[in-house]
Length: 121
Image: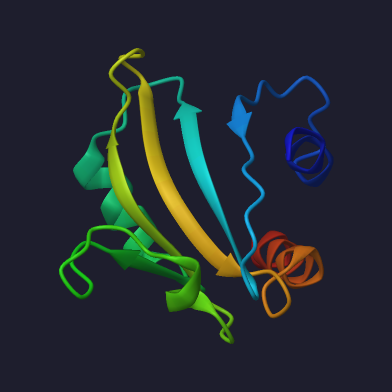
């Protein structure tokens, strides 16, 4: 996970702190993400950015939960993001939980979306 982000962002010095847990699921992966930004980003601004981004679904209340599960995201192209909150150890940090079907929404799909986004700029 660390090296893939560095490769995609063309940033070999990108600092990444990640946790990977391998559990038997049929299709979807889940990730706990902690990020640090140069300037403080509020939880509300992060939620708005996630909600506005194509290919991502913000989860705030789905079947009584504020987070997605692998079963929710199986067999679709959307990445679901929830439980966005302040990182209690870093004033410019946020943490979140995301799930996505790695077969339908994998590295190849992400590369195409990133290329499309860059071409539009």
